[in-house]
Image 1 (cartoon, rainbow, N blue to C red):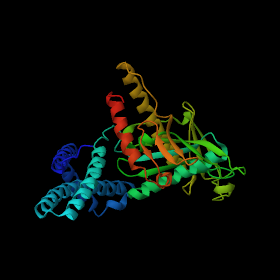
Image 2: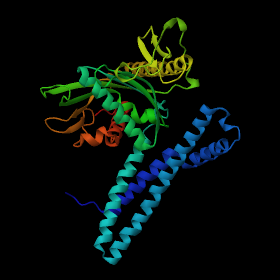
Image 3: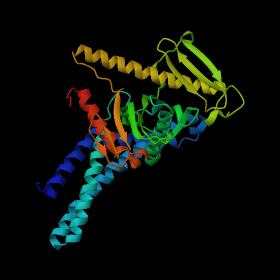
Image 4: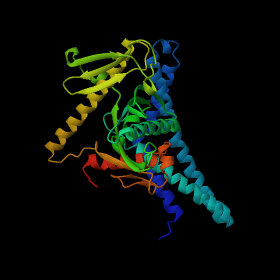
Length: 372
């Protein structure tokens, strides 16, 4: 295997970083940060908590992005000095330290480069995630709950806040479905490649004969709707059902019929919300989720029309995308990118970045028409 000259690789990383800085436009980012800092300092900021949350969240994200780029630039400069020191002193330990830092820096620059690929119309939005158990009975319900925990742990690792809108518990174990938001800029662009069917193979903990069981769960990712989206929903197109919120095993969470289920009759889309205290609040939250799902449906329809006009065939990402095998061997494999991980426990604990980065690159190739 050819040995790569560190100086050559440092130059390549420098070129990649320069490209990233051009795409992110750091001067414009600094100006935006200054504007947001001014808004955040306003004494009446928290008179509108929702608007204030958006300002502080965007400010925090942009500051983090800017610090991330500037930190990588600084590390690249320090690395050049470290190699020069190792060379002049003929110091093996320093050389090994520099090699480790080069490998670490390469991974961090590649991860940041993936962020610059998120340029879709809704990529900068927060995300609404819905998980549904599919084929596999009680194992599928348990699998859906495992996936819910996996994404919650991923968000927690990233420092992203989440809010669960609705959880429908299964009778024996696990969940029938759950809907939650990931409240971070670019959450939708980052997670949208997770949309599809996830397949689990394991020895069933619910089978007293210890047989292997295959079960499926679906993950749906849509962007959070904003006021500028103009998604109109006629009351005539809605069926509204109210019911009592429930917890695991059918236990009542509260004693009023405050949970709300909305059915959009023209499309058959059903959304529920039971996390708020009042029926009105739950209806408003459910309506926002429904608008998000209709927005994504509209985006997909427009993308399909454009593909037809260009004479391209469209392939749905809403099919089986990833296998998680716990028995007879252990592996997680993505069927689109062929990325594999031999430690399913770590993946199920939220270690998803390798899969997510690869699928973002894969989606970008699909959308640019480059193909596989």
